[in-house]
Length: 74
Image 1: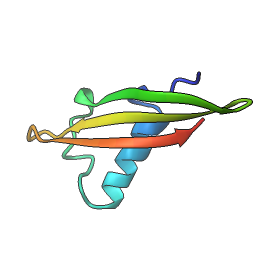
Image 2: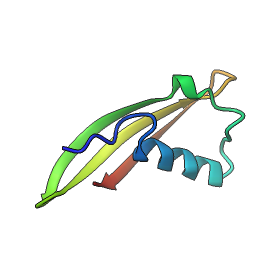
Image 3: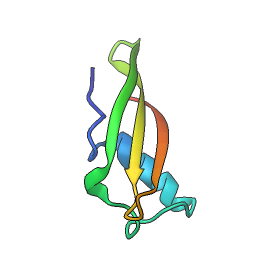
Image 4: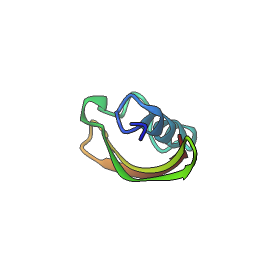
């Protein structure tokens, strides 16, 4: 299945963008070296199409963590 679980991949980027657009966090607050993305599920839903869910954890420089669950089709 496609691997979208890396910290520089789609799921993590979209999760951070949503948090940033909502005013929850920003680039200056997050310690990106501590970001973790774990694929929770992957299901084939078409010939070459998979639905995936990821748990993305961002750690701010203050130590506070923000967890996001994403769902995407790849």
